[in-house]
Length: 199
Ligand code: ADP
Ligand code: MG
Ligand code: MG
Image (cartoon, rainbow, N blue to C red; front, side, top):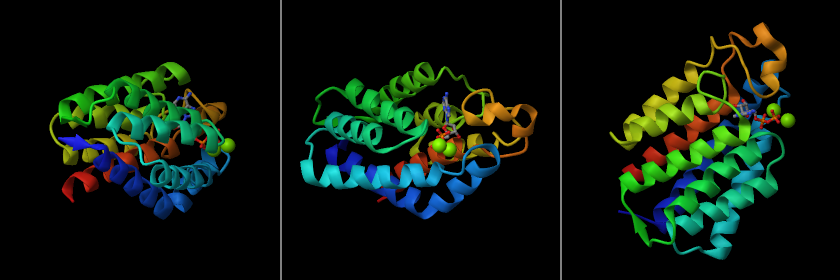
């Protein structure tokens, strides 16, 4: 069973991963965006960790909704509302249970990802964060490690795609040949999840 501490550790590991990869995320955002993805996310995830420590929410749902609200209020750019919605809607779907099993979490995360798709109007294959989030959640029924691998593959597979949403879409054909920064950060969330489950 996964408790509030598991989700707090997940987001702390995610913040560490974003911190380590901030320069890479910004670099990926430079040919097909505005070179700010790492600098958008890094302070947002740091603020999430600080808020979780201060407010100490006691259920998985409360941890994720608080984290989502913090991201929405801290992160500028498209990725703030999108990741904020992901966590907030996943948290809402978990309700107020003190612990949740992996299948319940998987379904809740799917609800959160569907909310991201609805908010951004993107579908898989549009070269966005969804291209890592969708395969990640699909593999989560197998294991956390399988989800990590699938999300990573999904992020790498954005390189040959033509961007249809977000800033990269303004480039049309010139977006081809570059890995999507948001899909790359989404894969980090699954990395952090697997890391949390292993420790
Ligand atoms: P901005 O583009 O506003 O500078 P970021 O650089 O932080 O925001 O985030 C860019 C990432 O957000 C993209 O790489 C993409 O994965 C994701 N993204 C942008 N628009 C959308 C959308 N409409 N739906 C889903 N993801 C999107
Ligand atoms: Mg950007
Ligand atoms: Mg920007």
